[in-house]
Image (tube, rainbow, N blue to C red; front, side, top):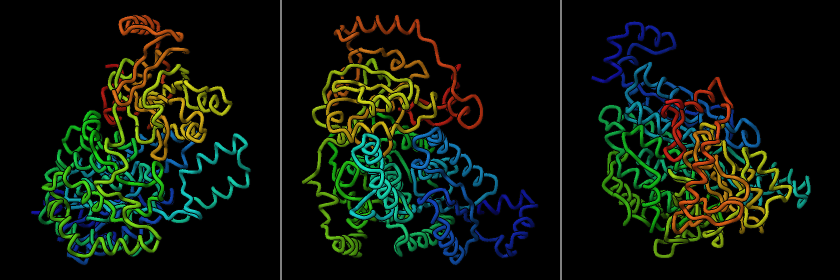
Length: 578
């Protein structure tokens, strides 16, 4: 018996309540489908999802089910940048996941179509799918077009810093701001939104080739319709997500992450998602899988092209074709077939030829966007996990975006207890070549772990600084960030991590190939590891925790209970006083 029918027998008020909103007696007997989306007029990634939700619902109903639309609207990281609104970004992921869990659990359904586009909504939906464990398909809202001269939103941070330094006029900045987002969809670069859409497909929870389709395109609407048809089948025959998405599925996703130079925020989201599927995925797993992985995607911010060209070049299936020797092709997917079977079908049905015609219209060839496996951009992945006495549990760096001259460096510590203090110092030219800019108390338990986007952009847009300093933080970075940025330092300062003990003039050893991030000197003078251990022990005895910034509300809950950055910063870690 379907789960929904079992619950009907236990809840006699359910039938009349559903009939009160227009359901017929026949509808009550059908498989019941949750159509859950992030629709809302909150930002371009969600404003267009209602049409897609309705299309999926209509097809599910035509296939013999009865669907119901639910909404868990997300916020926009871009709109929350530059003010305290950014502190709500990461916690919104966990609250959205819990709201979706409530929707699915309080009124029982037999399957669900989940629609989202962006930084926190896609991870939230993926977490919820693992948690509620009913047959499910993700439909992502695609990507927006680029603006004039291929202008994309991640360039606005650079132009804003240039304006504040007097390098461009206010009129130029205004023009860029007015033309950077010409349509709905995720921002057109390989930020966290685009990365997580790709991760959803790489995990096998989307129909093949449907991640990062152009928003507003007939193909995107068709993908929503096909998802509605397919969920009707899955509701009757399964499998449940935890039966389908396994350790191998997550390993595939991390390998794809390496191939696309995905956002470092995936190192927060994929471990938190894996946990809901009963899979342990660690920062060390990312480091291990990225070593030797082929980096193929020439898309911004690390590459040349807007993300709208990704699907034209063949999207996730083309990336997987190129790296399939490194993938588990036997994993199951929502098509009811294995990954290997899906790729074989796409090769036979003209999928790649149709996509390359779209790319040809843009004046590009496929290998300009997605390189061949044998001609990669790089062969050592794109992210690394650094460890040492400054980050005993680890820190994350996208080494593919770091200038080669900064892969090994000895830095002078310049610690700041907030991003506001740090960016002010950068823009006032108080940061000098050879400095290691420390931003601390911005981790999950410090301030909610906002992005250090404007500071990274101020550094990356300064040719001298971007090749001569490093930014080190227990906070995180935007998927749009590039340059010498090291984040997720764990343990974080608010939890008493060594980053809280750094003082002005300390020496920091950065060795990306050796995976090292360590304090190695005091007041510009080198010390032995044993001497540094003594120094840190003495400083720790003097250190006192800062008063919690947030005592109540969502941020109070999150900052008291968040796990460490390298564990995924999920919102049910050990209580702070345990």
